[in-house]
Image 1 (tube, rainbow over the protein chains, first blue to last red):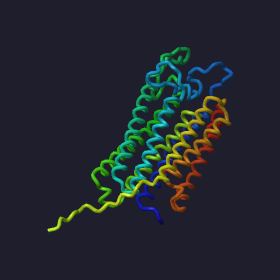
Image 2 (image 1 turned 135 degrees about the horizontal axis):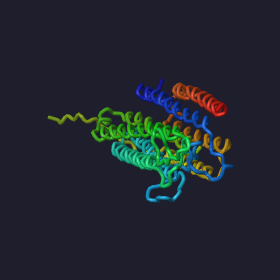
Image 3 (image 1 turned 45 degrees about the horizontal axis):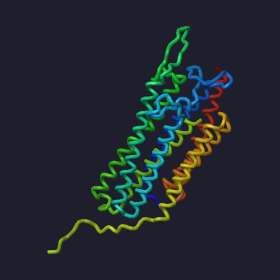
Amino acid sequence: MNVSYGKLMMWFFLLSDAFTFSGLLITYGLVRSANPAYDPASGPFTFSTEYWPIPEKVFEAVPFFHGVPLPLVFVGLMTFILIMSSVTMVLAVEAGHRMDRKAVEKWMLWTIVGGFAFLSCQAWEWTHFIVGTDVPTIQNTFGNKVEIFGANLTHNQYGPPAFADFFFFITGFHGFHVFSGVMLNFLVYFRTVQGLYDRRGSYEMIEKVGLYWHFVDLVWVFVFTFFYLV
Amino acid sequence: MAHHSEEPQITVLPPDKEKIKKLWRVALIMAIVTGIEFIFAFTLEAGHLKTSIFVALTIVKAGYIVGEFMHLRHEVKVLYYSILIPMVFVVWFLVAMIYEGLSILGAK
């Protein structure tokens, strides 16, 4: 076979990781389809713990535009950042094939910058999701009216408790992958600078870490569709 | 005495213009597909049609990432199929669980 041992094992690891993420996203699908959806006939959309929210109504905040509804704009930016860092990663791999250390260093640095930018966006998004909007959601529990702001694992203003749970688990698990990816990217960048891959005579390590980084982007494409769009 | 260097001789090849152009083209296609998704997100009513379009466009994007960026389309066929075929389990699991979820909703 014409695939190196390292690349083959990375592919099999990614396959198993794909199963893990599929498990999370499919469970989201199960719980979502088991909950009632918002009925447009009942009037304009408001947050309620009675039915599953419309995602674009939940994710419509953008930094510095407080109170302006801009649905999906911020996640769109995050998607753009991650796709761009995937492009810079392929350019690093391409430079590695040519043994061009300077170019590998340049593109790896841009990839690391993209990874940090994405993580920063996610930190802001989580903060907004946890703190909540200006107007609370009123939950009617046995005649007691309770005001809910923001979200935690047991209550959230956007919909059924499971909605926030899945948000924290799925985007959190993905964000953890991005974080590990940034660490690996930094490691191979550091070793490139040290000249290890020149001495080794091969830049295949960039390719293997690149596979992981593209996988992180791939998962985001699915999270974006199933969590934010559908 | 001649200086003996441990540093190997590195031959740096010039950038492959054709290959780099192809990579940027893939990036452009992905940006356009994401743009189309945004248009549908705001113009279509929620329903099976909208969901199907989103799923189809997501698979297109996933195909480009895995096929071109991760280079799987150009790897040996054994690797290609050993990654692709196990995905059948994911499709089965998805269909089974959505069906299950709708049954739970119906039984409530």
